[in-house]
Image (cartoon, rainbow, N blue to C red; front, side, top):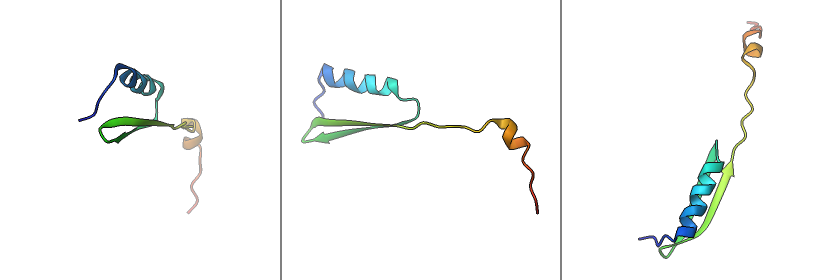
Length: 58
């Protein structure tokens, strides 16, 4: 069973609130949280008008 301190819980919750797209990896060693890694993904979507105006040549 993992030993959770209030400090660790708050750190994890804070990291979760900052991520819109991405992942949070919690590393546990011998029942203790030893590391929290967050990966944030930035997505750049194309405007829909560009997709509609493309010509397809066959």
